[in-house]
Image (cartoon, rainbow, N blue to C red; front, side):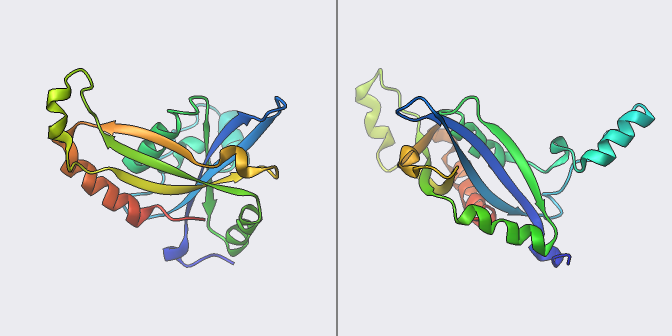
Length: 186
């Protein structure tokens, strides 16, 4: 059964990998949900150059490069890449009730909380100006890391830091307000 339009959306999955103490790669997926809106919608598909390409696109389903993305998604990805530069992004359309129910699989996985922090960029070379940063906002947002059926403690207390120029504080404040409104847990 198809979900009502207001419940349709996209799950963003940022896949990270970390080695445990035995050298085994452990996968952690940072996942969040975004509703589709008129401004957050699929990109237009490029025309296929041949019948074979057209067939391959139709058989493969929705192309990853056509999923919506905006400055919020890019901010999250940029933050995660500060610690995991090789991370990969995947998208999953949630259109049917069964697709929404399949997310329960992830909810049963081991989990760890992570933080995205956006901090004022401080000029460390001139301590006499540090007072300029007093009272400047530090923005934080929590995201969950779903760990691939292993000990999630390897991912405990992950934090991803980005830095903003204090002259853009109001813009960042507006973006983080939007972030809180549109980024939802799965």
